[in-house]
Length: 415
Image (cartoon, rainbow, N blue to C red; front, side, top):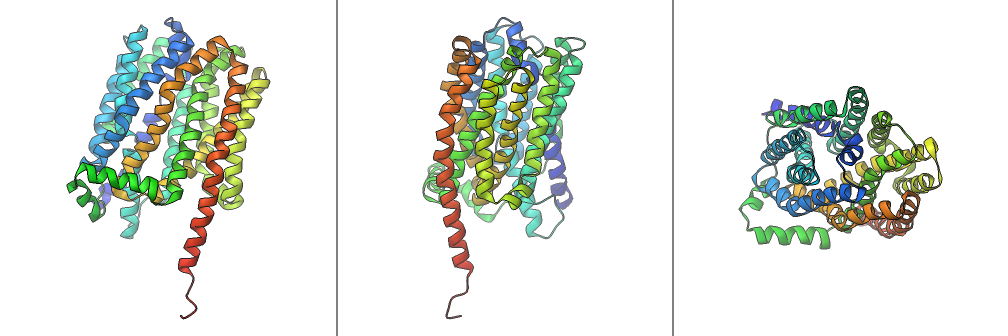
């Protein structure tokens, strides 16, 4: 059991790599446009993906908490493999809607469960003085880093496969999509605290009440961290689908898309990998300011820049993405009880997906009707105040929590 749990860490990293290794993603917009879809229709497929996750996200996270993270990961990985395999015959708008629906269910089952299983494994090994990975907090940032690095490798792979044809990209994606499921068979469910058993025995209504109380009336830092993840995650999703159209408008050849994607993914990977060291050097306040400033500068630079200069400004958004994911998710998981960790992670992802359901197609319409520059400037005008609205209260509550923690640890005068 101990050895199997220690192997969990490596296995989850490998699963994260193959989950992030999606060679079809760096050229997905040109792929769909090649089948006659407009940008509005491209974003509609993503809205369906977001809707599917919105419907399944929280139930799947709850299922992972109650019936086991490994089971949820296995079913989700199997569905993802089926979805990628369907690309072999996808040719119409409806085909791509079906593809996104299958992936939506699959990713909703994995989302939160992999983070929770990794975190639980690390905590269990640390509590018993056993050799594990890098520690619970660092492991989360490393998983994010691994997934981002895999996306970079996939980008390079996509550009190389395009030397033959787009069909080669689809074929490689269809068969590598089975790797996470095969690796998932090696996972072992990590023992959780005794109160997790009472959670499984409790009524679903009672569990729902406890989760709501945790988010709304528990530690204030948890709620505002969740808000921060939602805001920064939403911007990341928008830019994710803007990039490829932006490169096309800047005259970048399709064969270079994968290489640019690799550079962006590597930027996220390195940022996540060294986020903890940067926090120690700058302090959490300066780091939060940096995390908010970088994407705003990136949007402005992309809107006003042209050619490769505009493309390079996209790197600023990716640096912020790597730092914010690592910092916010570690802060969230550290403050959430183990029995509800997957559910809370899923709830946070739900916030991003729920908003994108409505706004994603609108973003596509804006790109089709208003153009790229206008759309980027509108995003800048919307997200600048949103970031301030979530980060200022978050900083205040972190400061208050830190002060209360020091007051509890300080010896009483009578001691």
